[in-house]
Amino acid sequence: MRIDLNSDLGESYGSWSMGNDEQILPIVSSANIACGFHAGDPLHILKTLKQAAKLHINVGAHVSYPDLVGFGRRKMTLSYDELLADVLYQISALQGLAHVAGTRVSYVKPHGALYNTIATDLTQAQAVIDAILQFDADLTLVALAGSPLIDFAQKQGLTVVSEAFADRAYHDDGTLVSRREIGAVLHDAEIVAQRVLDMILKGGVESIEGNFTSIQADTICLHGDTMGAVQIAQIIRQKLEEQHIEVRAFTH
Image (cartoon, rainbow, N blue to C red; front, top):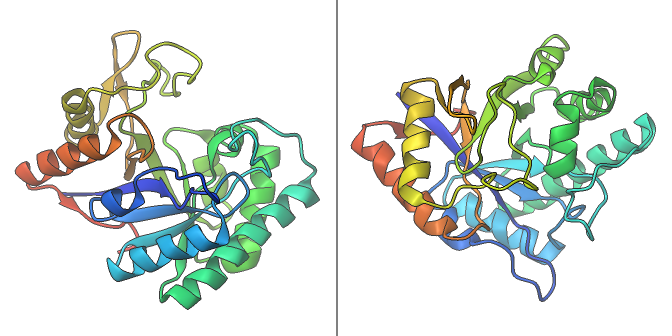
């Protein structure tokens, strides 16, 4: 039994330090690296890519709306051509830096509002899908587990990986609880680790409404910038090893 663990990294910008990249990278098997549109500057992005290459960590482009001020968490109404070009630009930039760092981009994971929007808005999703297909059809798309985007993208020839979140609460229908609601983000390391095990061994977790919710998890996101993130990641990794569950990149 195995699972991929991913984390959002490379988000430091200028004098602002974000996340715990150096501590999180040895724990995960895939790194979603910012491309400069929601966070990350070239220097920090390149540094993170070099660290990922050294540790043989799978690298993905964490593409976003052009929203540095809002950290990519504000929905934007962009034209098809704008969004296509934005995603192409971000993948291209990261692939260029990855080449210099001795690694390569093997998947795309949209960030924040873009991630949540294209899970159900298939018009915007089409621009992202077409950008991936035009750049490299062999790239994998990471999408919210249970979302319409998965089948939509697969029918167009993309390999899609279903993602769940270790520290986020879910509703009965499998959607994420909005960050604006109390209890949306979990911080107890033991509880979060047990939920990860439940996703893998039982195929789901308890929803915020108190019911069991099925979740197909091919990869699980461990946030690196929340309170106690490193401790939570370490305990999750420990619990997986105790259950003889291999942490392995989905591209393998």
